[in-house]
Image 1 (spheres, one colour):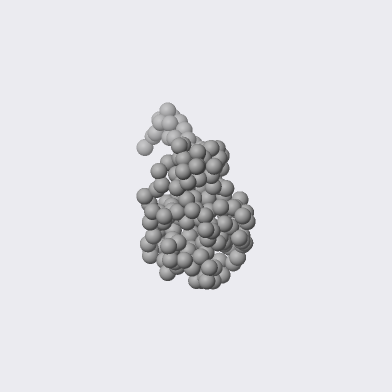
Image 2 (cartoon, helix red, strand yellow; image 1 turned 90 degrees about the vertical axis):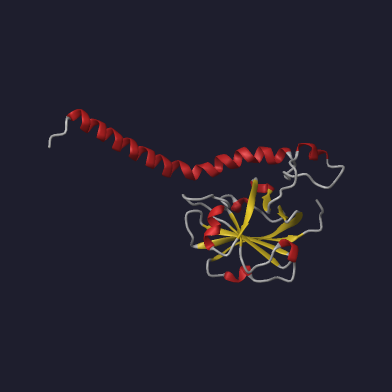
Length: 201
C-alpha cells in the first residue's frame, strides 16, 4: 500500500510534535512548584504569614485574612504552604497531598502527630517540594477540627527510609513531617520536627 508523501509529512510532523510536547512536560513540570512558591510567598507575607483570621482583636491584619478553614489544614508560612490534611488507612491517600499517618496521634490528642507527603511526583501534588527550606524556629500551624495549633520547628534532619521510629509516640506534643529526599529519589527521608507552643490564635 502506497502512502502519499503529503500524508507521510503530516504523520512525521504529528510524531515530532508529540515528542516535543512530552519532553516539554518532563522538563517543565519540575519547575512548576518553584513558580507557585514565588507567587504564594508574596501573598503569605502580606498577611503576616497567617492566611486565616486570629482571635486577637488587636490584630489589624485580620481585615485581609480569610475565615478559619472548616477542613483540617497544615500551614507553613516559611514555604508558603497551605494544604488540606487527609486521613485514611490506604497508603494511596498520600497522592492527594498531606497525609496524616494512621496509628499516630492528632493535634488535639497530644503526643506525636505525623504528616507525610510527596516531595515531587509526576502524577500528584509536590506537596513538600520546599520542605528543605524550613529551618529551626519556623512556625507551623495546624487547623484541626476547628482549632488552631501552633508549633515551632526544633529539628530538621535526614534519616534513612528505614528509620520508622520518627513516627513513635512522644511525651511532648510534637509534630513530625517527613518526605522523600533527595528531591528525585526515595532513598532517604527529610524530617522536620516541631514542638507545640502555647500561642493562641
